[in-house]
Image (tube, rainbow, N blue to C red; front, side, top):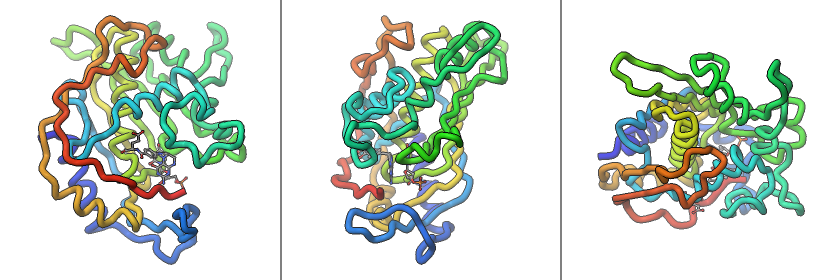
Length: 282
Ligand SMILES: Nc1nc(=O)c2c([nH]1)NC[C@@H]1CN(c3ccc(C(=O)N[C@@H](CCC(=O)O)C(=O)O)cc3)CN21
Ligand SMILES: O=c1ccn([C@H]2C[C@H](O)[C@@H](COP(=O)(O)O)O2)c(=O)[nH]1
């Protein structure tokens, strides 16, 4: 049984059984037909995934791992905020005529700041710090720039990543761990999508600095199930579970900037049927 399935099922049950509803409150998101998109939510969910044990893909249904990786490369490697650089259509509703989603995601990662050693953008600084001062407690990226919020079509949800290195006594190589801070999470549409993409990011960065990918700690402030997702979630969590797939990176690629979605190797991914046409609240 995949551990990611077990975590997902218990998180969903907890939200459905003990969550609070926003029904009747003033909420921002809408369904396609204009109705307000209410949720059942839990405040403050934390999930831990150990990549040394298994890759955290759901098997209840298939997570589109290559599309998820494509989006993470779009943000952290291409540092783009334009949907024309993205292969999937998941951001189409939030883009303007030029394809821009505003000063969000990749735009923020590309911004340079001055350091004693010179100018670095956010991702280059992470790689530099991990190479030069791996035990630093200051290795992070953050896309929640208050001054730019008015120019973002959607405020960043998974907005900050902190990297932390450990080296235990028998560890051959240092272990790279990550905390992902997420202020808001659409559990059905994007929970496992976000988890798998940051797991892949952790694996790529660990490869670049010759470390072992360790734990991913996912902190979710508002973990919600949308009203029109409740029945789908109830069905999903009753499905059979399978062992986690084996997911690895092409062993010939070392440099973070050289990875493409073709370098993601997915083996033995058994999963339940896809849920078609999940409505997305905009
Ligand atoms: N309400 C809402 N939920 C979200 O999850 C969300 C937003 N809004 N706004 C922006 C992005 C777009 N996100 C999305 C949207 C759709 C999928 C989705 O449908 N994924 C499919 C596979 C898509 C593919 O194969 O390319 C899936 O089956 O998971 C994933 C993330 C996450 N974000
Ligand atoms: O990577 C992502 C991006 C977006 N979401 C979800 C979380 C919320 O349901 C909406 C955003 O609405 P806000 O009102 O701005 O919170 O998108 C996600 O889960 N993961």
